Image (cartoon, rainbow, N blue to C red; front, top):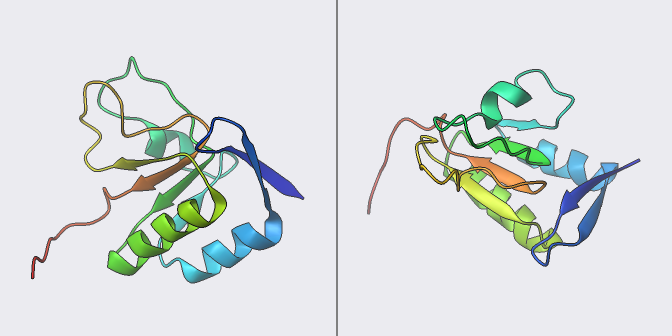
Length: 112
């Protein structure tokens, strides 16, 4: 079984179920697909005029999750977006068909 996502060049990227399971195993937060409960609520942003559907949503719980998500997107050449609070008027937090890296579960910042 494979899942199709959008790549950086606009073409399709096919992920094997093994690649997706390996990502989920290394990720502490939730990794949501369109079939998972909460997917539609998570992809919504403040500007309801924007209605994009990412292929995957990675809900980060900490720095290690952010690193894993960026590494996974780079390794597979995936189109990706980063959602903070979801308030960008242009809707840039949600990409169509790619990996949305959701930082909204994070509640603190530490700067060295």
